Amino acid sequence: MLPAPARALTLTAVNDTLLPLSDSTMPERLGGELYVPYSVFSSLGVSSSSEDNVLNLSAGGETLSFSTTEGYVYDQNLNSYSTPAYDMNGTVYVPVKLCCGKFGLSYSTLSAYGETVLRITDGSASSDSSFASDQGSAIESAINAYKGITPSPPPSENVQPPTQPVEPPIPPVEEQPDKKPTHVYLTFYGAPTTSTTPAILDALQSAGRLATFFLPTDTSTWPDDVIRRIVAEGHTPALLLSATDQTSAEDMLAALTAANDRLNFLTGACARIVSNDTGCSKLTQAQRDALTGAGYRMWDATLNCADDTQSAARAYATTAQQFAATTATVVLKLHHSRNTAQTVQSLSGYMSRQGIPSSRITFSTTPINSASDTR
Image 1 (cartoon, rainbow, N blue to C red):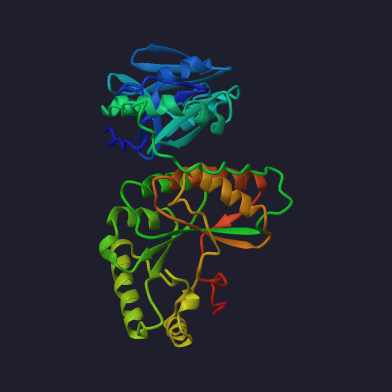
Image 2 (tube, one colour):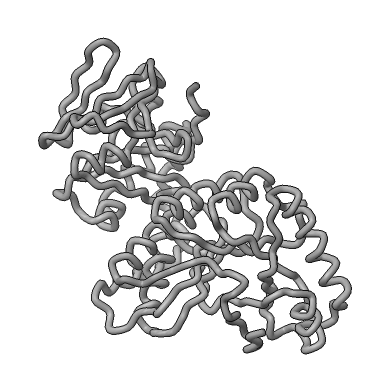
């Protein structure tokens, strides 16, 4: 059975060329994997043939054979794989990750004008940042044309356009920094969403990284299926208080208990890691004593990625710049914005290149918080 596609991507690029934007070229996300029409790989030196309903892709002595009718895929050595091809929109879609890995290609996703571009390259292309800069107008025009958005007419010669603030340049990323964090805890603050969080989870899964998700105690904001996926994929569910020094300890604990009841109902898990949206140092000693006495451990982020207020490229660059200025353990605060998945992907690549380890928070980990309360 064909899984329902999640249309989170809109454009495909091969090296430095944007492909025409249509239903037969747009990438799809199926079963958590990225797919594109097999013809996308043709311009990258991958040949194709079809016989008895089996699609064969070949390059560099490697071959992948896909049967869309029987749902199998195997290589020239008869090794089988778990990501089959699918018939969609009158063409055969093949898994990007498998094909790139098999044929020595690479891929990335770029955020642009509220949408995302899937870019597949063979090593001869420009950098992602250069591509985004050079193709910005073409990407915007393609998106507007597909959505039926008519560009605003140029201003009259007699009317001066409003002055736009000049955005500061994105800082360069140092690939050989003198410093780097000894460890990074990836944390996500706020309510997940069905429109952005699945892509974030995909990015974490692709990078092989685990994180901690601080969920608001107001469970009415929780998308149940996303919460289940967070826990099922091994991430730590945590709880986010919205307390002041005037909030009674009883009210705090009641909110945490109610949220844990919902979490346990959905996933069978119980959260014992907590944070406060204004910082644990804003809680009184009596409030902190009540939390630790009830079996909770308090954490705060030490670095805000600001992926919710700036582009993915800028969030990545500024965070990498701050990574290069410390040797401490970093608790990195991320969000659930439309730019977060790309930010996570870029940061994960940087951390891999620099050998910076990351992990989720566990109950046995010594807490880091603004109150210096390590209980």
